[in-house]
Length: 391
Image (cartoon, rainbow, N blue to C red):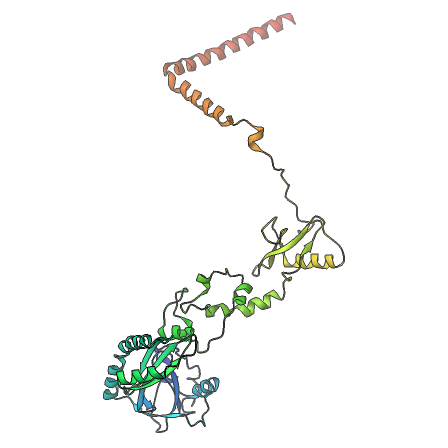
């Protein structure tokens, strides 16, 4: 029977599934717990008083100064693995404690402070603009007790915000902390839906951001369209890196794009590669698509080996493959009259006139046909009788 916390579903971002929750005594293996605050901010705290905590519990934890309110997102042995992954040492002096489960009074203060975040962000943007600072304040997060506010900002260059901190402290009467984040981190904090129809990876499960280069898109033969390659953060999409290793490995088993294939007639240059079908298309021109020929990768390797030995095949296709008959180009308009289509139209019009001209003539012709046939039969009979008499 699994632990109760295994089945509890949260709506928090960066939710971690505890795959060790069914292991016996895994929940009691450590006193450290993972607590998540607004958006993507997480911290690891020591449960020194042995409070029975489960995933989803709202707790009051130690902060500097005062206390903060967060939600328990992970307990048990998996917390130690997450701390090791994030380079958080258990013997560090920065490890703070869990005070208690949040009381009604704690939640009321937390909701009151949270309600001021949006107005504070708008006001702080105006103050930064008045001071002439080249920065954008993307988000504001109040501490659970309302005594401290964290301002997350984006800036391309180094910003001297010492004067801004004084103005913000005098305006909002709280302790100010400034944190610089990147465009990807801002998108993760704000959240949204990606072009794939799912929640953004940076706000749902990604914790680390790796730089994305345009070379990853070229390896996958993706169209180099900035509007399609850029995400909501105006940077290259993180998902471009997901499959690039597989494409790089697949390209190792295909001929190089720089190698040209020699035949008796001409030289063929690489045009495009279909990795899934393992087929390569070659062109007789380096720049444009001309006389495209698609061959399997195995055939391309055979031709490369033949060229190394000084042998040039008749064509890129295998000799057993039948070649399509070449049709000579000819001028259609030069050989035939421009009015060739008018004759058929006139014939059709004449036929329509004969059918629709007289109704009685058709009946007369139908009546005369059997008489003609009878006459022919009679004549044939007379001829046969004459032949017999002569004999």
